[in-house]
View 1: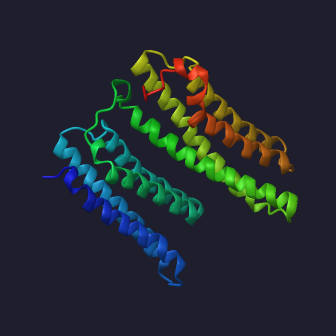
View 2: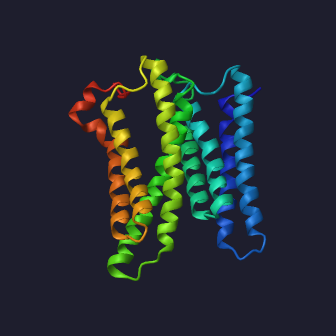
Length: 265
């Protein structure tokens, strides 16, 4: 027997595992890399066990309510953080993913009324969850790339520029752009199922395309003019502004009143 009543126990254990994985990085222990990986994987395993038991208890995939979607965020984000850690060794990105997962678990813990709050019909598509997960993670990674760009601009104007920052920005943009593209594709499949069209140039969709293009401009500049520093850094920093308009700002534009992606009304 398992249901949301057990959630604080599982979430607490996962949080403790991830806290150990992060805090051990401050120590000089020769085994801290093993502890980082072990703590991260244990937290993921605990949340995976809870999701599996919840799935069995509900007799359906836990992808229908707000609480359930947040639960999935907290499960998948550490997996992607671990991937980047193994691929590039970015501990801070792993920490970032673990922190985001703890945030989603905390929101669920503080808002138990959302556990059984049913999503509106348009958000109950099986494409909704993967669409949101890859989008949220791409936003997180691309935000990190823009922070690197801002630091690079600071170095360019006031200190000696470190070219390793451009390599780091490239890796983050390529990773984030891949997930962003997947998010667009999943979103098109979701739109087809929910509204009957893959793409309608709705204000939200238009800004999603502009965001995709903004990061494509950065990659174009890096590919065509690899010796340049200032232009790609400015391009990457400004691309994040376009992303923020797509994420939040578009909701405050007059055209948003006709958007099918406004879910607060």
